[in-house]
Length: 119
Image (cartoon, rainbow, N blue to C red; front, top):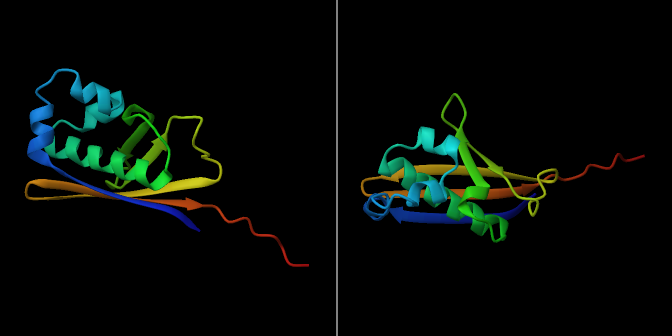
């Protein structure tokens, strides 16, 4: 059952300008994300995805508490590093896209539905 949806769009040039500040990238990306996101386009995609996740789950989280890594096929997967998020009952799906000067992302939060056997 879907319990939350979030979306965000960001101008890549805005993120590129922010990346000139030494502390920007380490403040919003985890160490593993930094290894993958080397271009303004990829950093902008992660920014949009993290904003979308925050909107979808409705919790006040820091960007460092949200980690988005890609599987071998390139599919982004979200891990929340916070006790506030119930990872046993909730799953997050995210999609990131880029078009010309923009990066956008959508996040969907799903709650596992407990099936009670009918007797």
